[in-house]
Image (tube, rainbow, N blue to C red):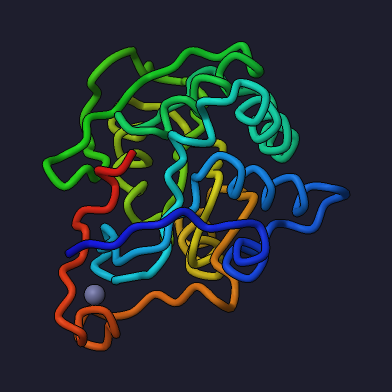
Length: 220
Ligand SMILES: [Zn+2]
């Protein structure tokens, strides 16, 4: 049987590290706990790792106030001359839409495949030659799943000027991918010391014979 529970405030503080900005960590930990967005269970991620926690961004984004707060913090971290926001067909859409409104930019939605991974193909909206593109998603592990969206922008002759995500569980991995692609970017939170990502063969829950929820992205 699959056990799933929401995580309260005290536990959220150990599980999630929020970028140190005045007041932001307390706000984000409360938001995760109050909206039930932070779940404990047994999850399989896109990159193949298993984990005991998952952020269901859809739960947080149902509050226009919280979504606006997240968008305001993220938008302050990039150059504002963005013409187009590319976001996958996922809960990340709500964040992409909030950022596009703040930037006066258009929004283009990329398809996702059967595993809910972003694909190098547009579902809705346009990307044109010369566009200055911001790539957005809700929560990634390293952001490797977003690379098809960087390629998609290049396919249309556009330039990616930034990548913004609410959460990057593997913060150093996220920064490494941005560096390798030569794109600036930022995130508000990452996995803390109490949040471990396991290779499936070393996963304690799998060791107990419990089946992972896979792909966990379906929770959004
Ligand atoms: Zn497992």
